[in-house]
Length: 247
Image 1 (cartoon, one colour):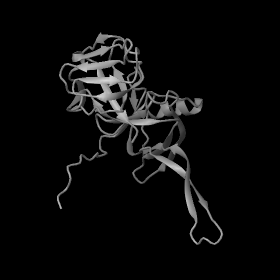
Image 2 (spheres, one colour; image 1 turned 135 degrees about the horizontal axis):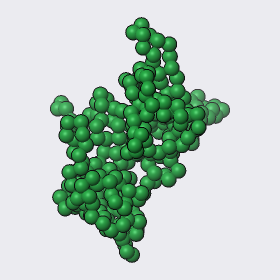
Image 3 (tube, one colour; image 1 turned 90 degrees about the horizontal axis):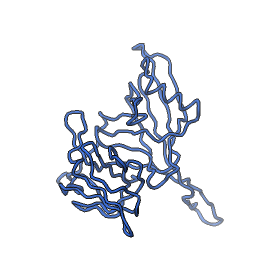
């Protein structure tokens, strides 16, 4: 039996990036384990007289948590210490990404759930181990929907993500019709964009704050669910699009 051609995700380049895109962007340092969120429903068991096997029913659902552990490092001000700042203030925050590799990441899906956010639920430091290092771990809770972003208008070069066609993207505001984004290179499908993805826009002069989903992904055109939300403009070199779905 031949092996299939699936592309497997390996964990060596995973990272938690806080305050993404800001001047204080930082990585939670020293991590060697990251637990990814899933979805689950509570199970209720019902026992009925004269039935030998109880029945089970799935009820209310919930999002899973992000867990992490690693070795605590000094002066991790933009990483672990920033998580502690969020914890003490019980802050809800959205500008965090959990990278599965140098390109693909998980974050809250504010296109489909505008109230979605992260909160820090737990931070711990353990006793020093035999190597005389201090372990730390924590839990980051998801308040709402999340998405895994696998579609990108960028390529990996060494450890740097580079926009390959940002200037070739064109944003078209819908007038009595839906918004669209076109690509002169017709590479949306090969870049991993598919119907139904949430859309993140980075580096655009006027469209970064647009929250929408992709209804149809074609090689040269993304047709969006929004109508009149985009500002008509040509992209700049730094413009990057990300497409993601729950899963």
